[in-house]
Length: 172
Image (tube, rainbow, N blue to C red; front, side, top):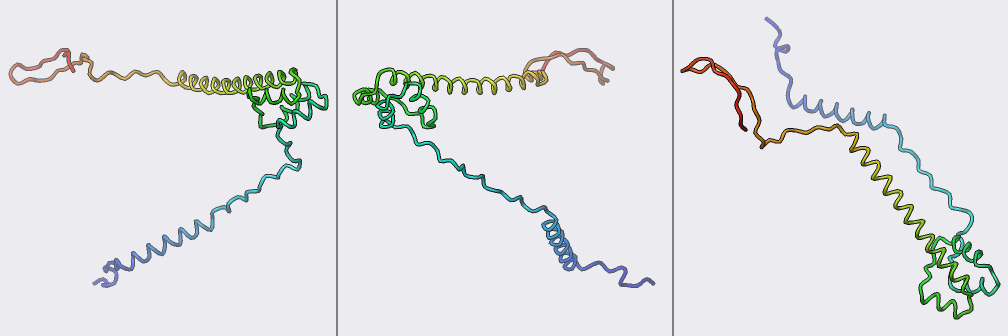
């Protein structure tokens, strides 16, 4: 007669504890084996201070100093804020002694900058649409059958009263 210990089943409460211990050990080992997270370094702050934004007083000062319109426009281009010369600002600058060629150069430079920005946005949009069109053209052309359209299909088989029958059936 065989030993009764060999035929005994394992206690279900004990096997659940073993399973829990094995799972927690596996999670612990997986956490220890994972690579450390990368260190994120901050970008260095630019050493040179940013140029002060061009103001109306700065334009008046440059014009009073006798700066050429190209110099004023160059200073305007260095400024990232893009001073918007409104009609009221232009009238105020002219009343404060800024010559008309300087004001015209500022307006022309702003229009050119706006046109350049619009052209850049248009080029980016065109590139995105070209990529979408190329992806659409590269997609395989498949036309699944329309499920509500009738189509012919063959049928056949042994029929009890008359024997073998077959043919072509037109329907849905």
